[in-house]
Length: 316
Ligand SMILES: [Zn+2]
Ligand SMILES: [Zn+2]
Image (cartoon, rainbow, N blue to C red; front, side, top):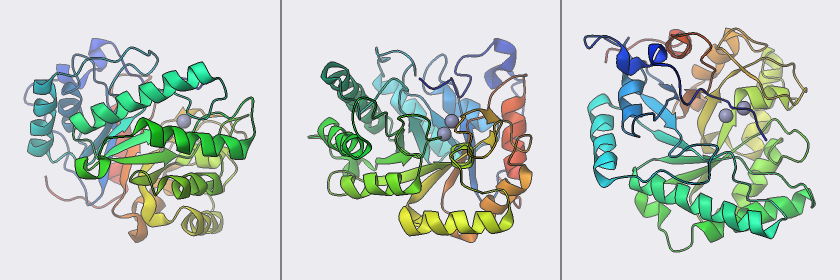
């Protein structure tokens, strides 16, 4: 199982909702920049937190990421979320799926549970008018990799039966992974293959994580290496299909397959990697979202500021 990537619940002193009522976030930029934000106290609170952190996009879990039992989402909560998003110009809203879900698994009982849980993710995504639902392609332990990819695609299609994602404006994004052990999605080719399999069933795109890309072995640090990696990404997944970039610096070295997120600019990647990606014209329509740890109060704000700091400012 993956380690927790983000602090979902944190002590009060770290909560932006507790900041002074007259707190003014710094201006947004010409890029969509945000961070994974806690839904503690109700899903709509995440929008208020994201605004206070100076974001113009954000990511949430729509339920507890490590429990099967989903929160119940009230209609008024969904309306409050939409209202806050309009008021604060927070777009897109990205939902990250529960980490327990494995749509590639060979155990039929667990697979059934995963499909039901993913159906819940889609239902909540539609209820919240989210633009994107991010999913890790899963683990093929107990079977072959090709078989695993096919099973994930079939499971997604099954989970979405009878729901009109296109009409709801919801797109499923397959995230690339660190590629450890049996996890699918460690290469751009595998992500691309999954998109290919899914296109006939649901609206799909990709979410590319900078930390995962690096530890999976791709060079995004040197200028030449980054150009080559982006060319590979373009030829397989297609740059226009990468709707979300998870912006995480990496604690571990390239090729280590160790998924440990680090604060922006303080890991093996460094700030220049993010400056290059955020200012790349080909990526200008993507959302850039940090999933960095909160070790000290204010880390979330500092990481958003670090990303915004590498692009030009525009007034709110
Ligand atoms: Zn990620
Ligand atoms: Zn990760």
